[in-house]
Image 1 (cartoon, rainbow, N blue to C red):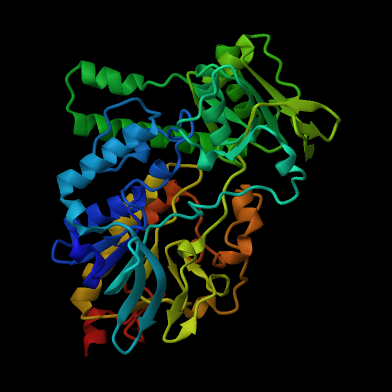
Image 2: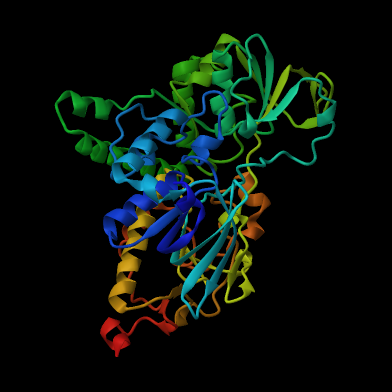
Length: 506
């Protein structure tokens, strides 16, 4: 976009981040609020977010694309898709919607300040060429994700990493030019990234050892949708196929979520049965494949076509369950005294949490500490006007919430226009005074390491479903569209809603 890309500008709405959330949000804004002007600010040189950052072997979705894809854009490929297939899909959305003309690539936001007198956000940004840009807008739509894309998480307690004479790399920083053929590769971790990279490294000719502190639940299934294939075979159009198959996946995962709470041992055995279909009836689950937590307490790691277990059975991959004593010149010495020798060590140890991109925020000159705010349904925050954050689901596809929040934001913007309001905040109702305030999410509900390490950085939750991100898509798909925008929890231009638009206008 040349000079225009670096000159900033004034808009009705600013969308931050051109990943899966930002592109979907831009589509909804254009579709549902066509009169609104907007810009989409992205720090990278291209769209894609997570799918552009990660380049390790085999990088793929950990959710089916019928639900990870957008509601409005049919998915026609395999349910579990490669990063490139997802980028191609997003590129089609951008092209079909003309979204590219609104994206300002190469801009890193350095501050975000709200002024109540002007009812505007002012965002300062630095372009990759070193020039500065100022963006202003009435409304801020944060879609920048939740982790640091430059600096991954490597445990500080690891001793002797520098002693290792081979190649050490975090999966997030993987160089695609790396040749692993004939190499001994040690993968540290057992979550979704490890479940992806282990079979891919084996496919490229490596001998792989996966070192895990504790086992993970895996979900193995053929990478096909029999329902989608059948509907296509009988001549059903793709939008209908997408809608029906999407609902089928949503229903199935609702049942899995419900049953994992009500009958966790039954679900555990069903997951083991799926593994046996690829690894054989006599496959030994002890000690490496018996997790200490119930299914779905952490996200299930998807293994399309049981690929990792096929390599374990074939002898291309092995698993060690232990902790690290220290690194040596030859590899890793475990706490039990076993030396795991390697040519390459790949850390799949997760992320550093970034709340709202670690951007310094201010409201009327006062710095915001997100840990001092309380979330409204995981979207808005007490004391912060005209801003919504897209934070997706852990146990359902992230993008399902992109669509729901998109509907909410567009409805809110239209409601503000109808009211003549320039400012909206979420605030405690009379009935909320004195309620218990607790961390963002319960540890026994969902407890991945990146959340547990930095929970204090996240907004707090209150009682009930209004003042929390409840992680329940099946509840929110009905509850959020039914939100009363004249409910007491909304304050427009400093006046609490609840009296109705007509009375408020008087």
